[in-house]
Image (cartoon, rainbow, N blue to C red; front, side, top):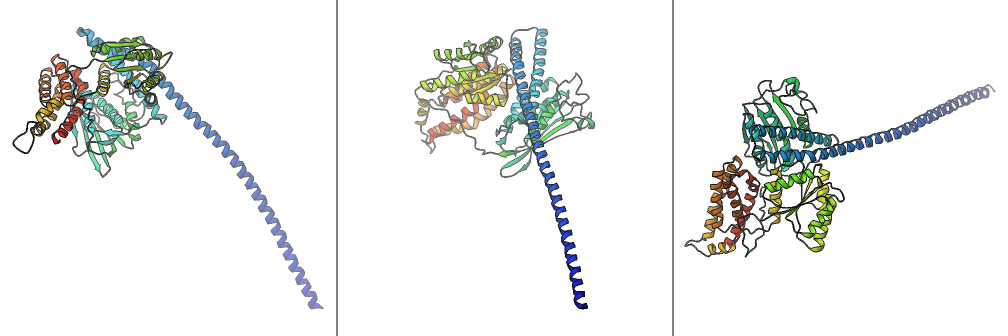
Length: 565
């Protein structure tokens, strides 16, 4: 009995222990469930807060985007409003300077030009800075010919450099590919800014441009650009903050040098946008070297030759064909200015209208060589007028008339709208006589049918066989190829330097040599340059220089084809 009693006692203890464990387990389960419920509630609360924060962040982001867009739109509008009167001021000052003036009057006009250009530079810098801050600056990738870029910059800035008593030297690495891929406009902008800075802080010294190849592989080249001067130099303290917006060195802030304090900041932003690096090495009183490095893609070095269409049985005079222009602009000052500029370029057949509707009416009544179309006009703007003109040309199967947009709003988006509407090119206000001349020359050459060769002369030469295996035409072509490129470069130097006598002689020699081979179109270009040089107006021939090499190459290709046949 005692054994049974003991067993019962053990079972009771076991049951009690199990019961206690079950109770504790239940309590633990309930505690865990409570904790999980609390955690779940906290998670739901956090999710709600996160969603709310996300909405707030999105609203803030959109607000920032809208603010950036509004800022860009505001500055673009202000830019247009400023550029329109600036175009009148700069243009009229340029026309005034071309007239007979006393020394005092000429100095006064120069002050007007310099002050207006400074104001224009400030507007352009503010516009660029706004686009960069808003992330709206876009690269325009295309062909980069660094040698041509450097030559252009030298032609543009050398007069400024010499005015400060400085010498400009260039050292370009011959290993750099002829054609690279990148944003040529932005590279030019950076170099011009750095060279102008170097010249501004240097007097009776030297400004050196170095372009060196740093790395070379199958598809890219890393290029280092350096602009070194012997000027006032920069202290170490100023160097540390030099590339920040509106920051200038202590001496740079003085009225002696002027400036906006935006140029170097914009240069840095543009280099960063192109995934490059920029910096400065300088010691106060010992000059400065600003440098930047870019990796540019390689392109096929075989440049295409723009062969013009050949027309047999047509005669072409050495004189330039008459040009008729339709000018559409609602601003009376701009109309008067552009008409004066066109007259200065020898273009007198000009009809002026004040809105898009009048432009269409004029277009329907007369054939024009090209149309200069203001972007913003009352009644009908330039975009709508262009669309209607293109539609008329398509319906009536007319030849396309080049239409050049004129506007003070130089935002890329506005340029795109002009191109989409059917315009051929874009000229931003204010523009100089030289810019207008080059634009007209560019589109006149592209729109005129050109006869590369006088085939009757070419056939006469081709029929004169020599005793050897080669034809006379082939031998003459080889001689022409050997001499002409060098002579064209010599002519270019004489034109740029304003040496009228030397330019006349070289142009005449090139014209005669071209005519003897039946090279018609190129000889007309040489004839125009010769005439301008004879009249002591060599600088007016500069817009023709860029057309010489393509015309020469087209003539060589055409002659080679005839020689083989």
